Amino acid sequence: MGETNNSYLPGLKACKAEVDGQILTITINRPEVLNALNPEAHHELSRVFDAFSEDNNLRVAIITGTGNRGFCVGSDLKSKVNIDNPLTQSVAEKPPTGFAGLCARFDLYKPVIAAVNGAAIGGGMEIVLACDLAVAAEHAVFSLPEPRVGLASLGGGGGLARIVRQIPMKQAMRLILTCEQITAREALEMGLINEVVPAGEEL
Image 1 (cartoon, rainbow, N blue to C red):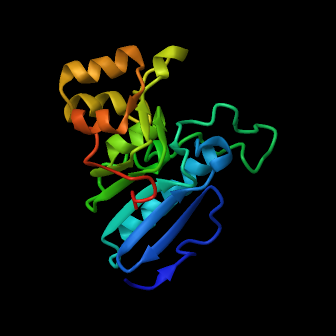
Image 2: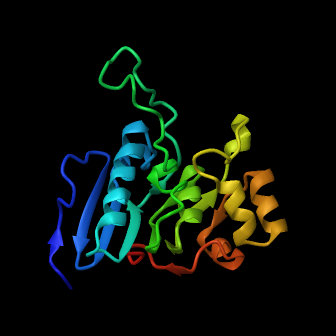
């Protein structure tokens, strides 16, 4: 294995970026909210994926979450841009590259692997759908619960557009319309992920 660089990009708070040889591991680092993403996290992740795209020394990226409970449970609904603070007033909720800086990024030619270490809910599942490969721990769960709050996975995540292309239509509609939460084994059977492994072995 190559040398590990724990500070691939300076100034990251909501995520970590570590290089080992030609592999970049991106870890969402907000375990106190099960790695839900706030505006700062979206923009940090976009910056990391920008650097990955432009770095000729890197060939593959892996995205995962801190801890073993949440890969990413979507948007941090309690986090709002503070319009009274001039430092954040002009910060959009999401960058042009979409949810997690990845889901609306259509010019990335390098593979991205999701290492799902826990719950992949809402936007977290959309990250999985945006990745080229996905490996999940046995205890991981998946769902698109947006309809429960009157929303749909259409915007920066594009989950609805992707899921109907990746699994059979009836299975996709089951998840979209019922908001059902499925296990890693069920996700594997549907074709949402590539492999299920014991907890801790997804990386």
